[in-house]
Length: 383
Ligand SMILES: [Zn+2]
Image (cartoon, rainbow, N blue to C red):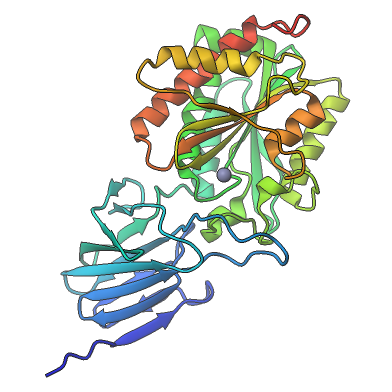
């Protein structure tokens, strides 16, 4: 007898429907960062899931291929299931990670065939989380900032609020000098490896090492680690709650998230403070550092090159790729910062699949070499 293949279908169109509840197996997306589109039960133990991006604002380019997903699975009775995942509006980019507590993650073995990703999973009444990358919620950023702010002279305060009125936090330290280093993160919600780098990078800048203490005498540090809390909460592929790519909004400033940063930096400069450098953390296919061309007119043309060359020297087996670029029309943060403040800015991109311990190690070295470079640089001679 022919087996009945199609048993059930569940379409999740909004956060009001938070589960795909089949007879034994339940898929849920009732937590921060969750994303799951459509679920179909093919057999007792086989399920097909489809992932969709968020809506893009009208007349905007198609969304970047960054198919984020995050959901959890439980079964009333323990069973082994097969999950097949399809993507609409893109192609699979992130190998699945699995967790039993939503905090500790392991790479899941999977197959990719005909653009469908499939894997086997043992499920029980205890939830199993499945996600495109490690889950990093708004709450985790806040707690991390709060821990940093337990140190003397480091504060975490609200910079402003997102489109959906979520707080956007800044972590700051101000010494006697007027020079500022700006660190920005999570414009793009799924770019978690960039986020994994911003934590050790910032912790190194704000540490009590002799170098960091000397650095903070001369330089003030402003860290905005999570500029897109709405996108993070909603499990967006790229955009903020208005369907806009924030890293294309630094020319129009029609999005409250980027506008508030611009207002804040402009106010600081109005108080005779000086923007010296910005580092914006992202993820892409490879580890790469997008810089501004050294002949672009920055006060110290070779500052970033000096920094990244010294980072490269520390890693004989790793190539620190520097890619200078200049796109005045696009509304990218790096370009904005350089155009407005005549200071260097870079986009610090970690590969999606870069070893997590290496991300950490490199970020510590990057922060240390940056501090050394900035301390020994001379803004007057440009060296
Ligand atoms: Zn990005």
